[in-house]
Image (cartoon, rainbow over the protein chains, first blue to last red):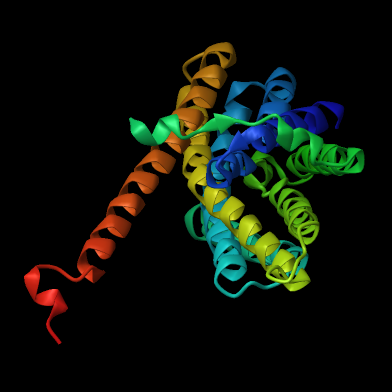
Length: 109
Length: 171
């Protein structure tokens, strides 16, 4: 948890000092959680295990893309409040990630 | 590339945030990382892997960014700047940040792809730095490409909307 908090905060700080904002935003999708957990997971379970995690991480990243585009549109175009938009839209991420997982890998498991 | 030179480091951004904003991000990041590990342990690496690309930091960053922009704008309140302008400005800036994140997700997917394909054959010490580098290169390239294309489109539209030739003064 400490490692995760530190890595996420480090990327967040980097995003805060970089301009313009659209460039700094790139770091909101940095692999911070992965960088914090993967070395520990590899040490405990081996590289094959991490490779399986990485395979579905690709699907999670695609769902993140849908989430970020939707959030961006709702904030820039419709100017809806930030907290409800960013938090309720997480349902989009869940729906997208699990739909992709089920469609592509669900039957194989 | 000229677009890349526009990227700059502005340490003054650090002074605009409150200490508790850093604490929120630290706790948020820590909780999401711990949850990703717990989910992988209970449901296996296939489901756990999805959460390695969970939008862990975007909701907190966007909310704090909007609040900070709102405060900045409201400190300049005058006859021409209304308090509601700060709220709108805050939402727009948070939206721009999310648009940047959307471009970053392509880099995130490339990062995961390299780990997925590389780890069965190569060591983690080699694949992880390579994947991280690929994330930065991909995200930066997509951002640069988008900025360049967007600038060209705007210039084209400006040319089209400008009255041309000697006939423009005729009524």
